[in-house]
Image (cartoon, rainbow, N blue to C red; front, side, top):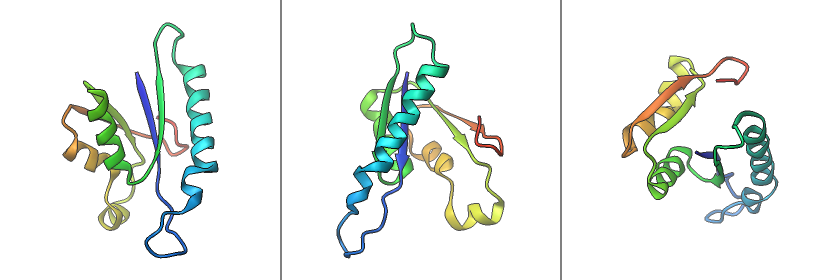
Length: 114
């Protein structure tokens, strides 16, 4: 089992450079939350790998799945309004379009749980 969390890259104050904060505190915090999730929800006899990346979420998810040779991607969606979806797109939808393996999309609850 492999879990991935992608933190979007923050725009830099200097054009053309990535923000130094992109690899700092947000990455560490996300890795800690993933570790806590694994400890709480995944049985000890199941091996789980956690990965935290920074970048465009759908690209990082599809790339990681390809690198791992994933058989399946399971992704939650926030269920944004049609208006917001039309403006911003959907990470889950883009993963479905670009992934080379099957994708199951679960609708998340309003409190963020799946």
